[in-house]
Amino acid sequence: MKSSLISKLLGFVAKKKLETTSASKNISNRQLVPLIRNLRVELEHAIKEFIFITIGVFAAGFGLKGFLLPNRFIDGGATGISLLLENITNFELGFLLILVNIPFIILGARTFNLRFALKSIVAIAFLALVVHFVEYPTITDDKLLIAVFGGFFLGLGIGMAMRGGSVIDGTEVLAIYLSRKLSITVGDVLLLINILIFSFGAYILSIETALYAILTYLAAAKTVDFVVDGVEEYVGVTIISNKHEELRVMIIDKLRRACTIYAGKGGYGTSGKSYDKDIIYTVVTRLELAKLHTEIDKIDKKAFIIMGIVKDLRGGMIKRKPLK
Image (cartoon, rainbow, N blue to C red; front, side, top):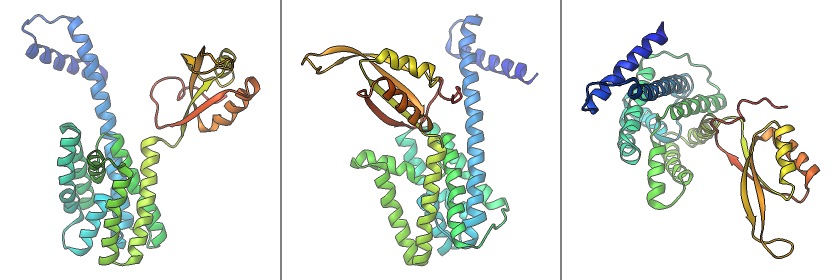
């Protein structure tokens, strides 16, 4: 029933879109079907992004109100600036979160696009409302637990919001913008920003608070990496060998993985001349890497192997096939 209603609604929207762009009033199903399919994909992705952002906002709210805020702790980034200002002014944290992030969101609209900026504004406003109105219990007064788990839940929230295509901490946007302008890495820019924040924290609050803030930031940053890049690490493996056919069969039959074959040419052979060869590329999990090396050595110990970390994957076999 719901699926039928959504299909009718998508069909109505698609028809209206075509009517505004097409001079002809006679719109065929052949014109409607691709547009309806695109609208359905956009709707599915929008729902998924909304779920990610919602989880992220409530997780970040829990980290802030359940751990950091009651114990006057700070963090890095825009959230850390907001917490620092909350400690030295009479303003509410929810208001400060919006105020501090506004310049970063404006910069995000210029650096990325307006859609990203609007989603981020909604996410930050949502977080401000959650921080202001939702009552979270104070979990602990142990400083080490506050730093570690406050950072964990805050990082979980930031990471989930990023998976939803928005930010609830705008310093990432500033870091990307400055890295393009100054030809330095995003990580270096974030490090410099947070050194300034922690230095102010040490001066205004105490050195001990600043040290715990660094621990909170490290816990949050590591959690963001896990959420955005995935807990399971993937490795892209390129294999160059004269026994490429045997290696291809081994990857498919023994590892139960797919692989791609590139037609290549060696730059220098044993006889001093270039020669044709097939180059194998496959992606495996970190846990499968030892088995892959063992099987390659059985076939060709002199195989040339290049490995690199793969941040994330879509499609293909690797996330569907079980380990054998």
